[in-house]
Image (cartoon, rainbow, N blue to C red; front, side):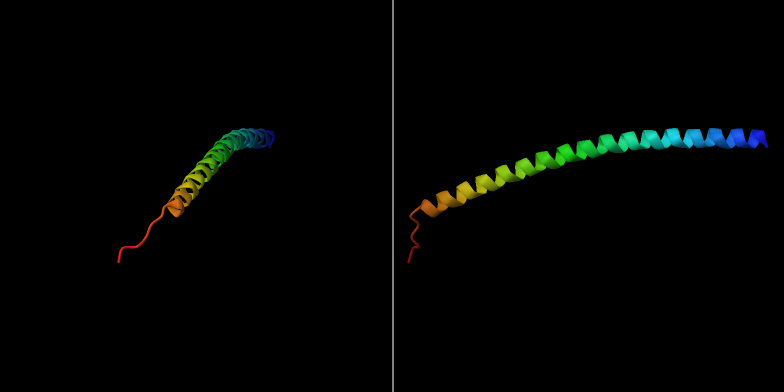
Length: 67
């Protein structure tokens, strides 16, 4: 019976170690994804600012429709 308990304890320790490693990988991946999301948000803001500037410039043009 003691062998069974020791074997089970070893399995549990291995499972806990694997779970800890998985959590560390997930934390790293989460941080990477957060950085990517911030970068994409910044890029989106820049593109929106460029589009707004282009639209303002177009609005300033004196465009008359031809007859």
